[in-house]
Length: 285
Length: 128
Image (tube, rainbow over all chains, first blue to last red; front, side, top):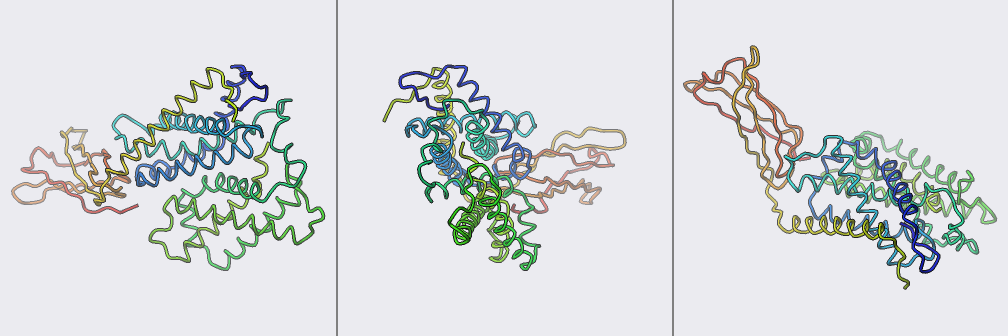
């Protein structure tokens, strides 16, 4: 799927097959929990088609962003990024249709709207998994010399890139948990005092992952000191909360719910999306 | 902007993907434009009775022709003879999306063939 640096040369078919293989493996790896989740099979057919359209559009934009910042060579053109994103959605649709068929979730008696709802909803997560898998699961070769990381080595990564990657990481993790009934249940049942604890724990976790764990592509405290740590941590947590609210809104978790319970749901899911947001930089090869 | 370097396999995958994606988008747009806002509307169809040992099984098809999903649809099937209730059976369909059907059986100990009429009705359902 990746573009090739050697101008005018096409990548050999074997190489593309390997990339598709990685994509398929990654797609399944990241999305199988969702394909095995009952709420996913039920939500798709019952969602309004315009909600599904928004979901497809949002996934596509997310894929464009991810392929721009992480999935491809740094010098990839927008047309290549577009082609790759379309391919990832296509592979996602086929994979999710296959898996759902094997799991007995699709059959001939279903109407087109039911089939489309089920497949589209799960396929979008598979597509993001395909994208991450293609770029992440491969071993490094000499061809990686044009990667984004190298291009940014000269200076610290910009706040834009930081936000985009944090957001993608948050959605990737949050999207796996948001559709389950458990988030609603926790949102309604966990006392507000304990939620403060969840917020505290999320912030500490973000700081640890961002600065004190030597995760790949993380920066360490450096000379920015405590102020930098606090600033980055708070920004990351804010992105995580936005992402949590967005995926919860998509799965229609706010209608008919009191505002305090809506907020508790965001905080509960925020614990998970914080993990994704802080580890977002891992998604750069 | 440089021309993407793709081998034939990649072009094939791309065009199939493009076809799938535009098909899905086209269908969703069509669906979004044509969908109404009717609440779930449940229709019940009864099949032919079959005897299984001491039990009589009556196939029940629950169809949602409304525009929204119904959850926990409770259906009651009553055997009536001479305006008197002989026996009632109940079944619940966990989830019936719009334009979709759920299948089940109502089970009786009395032969439904001896009833003068079989009445089926929806007792209620939830919105997910």
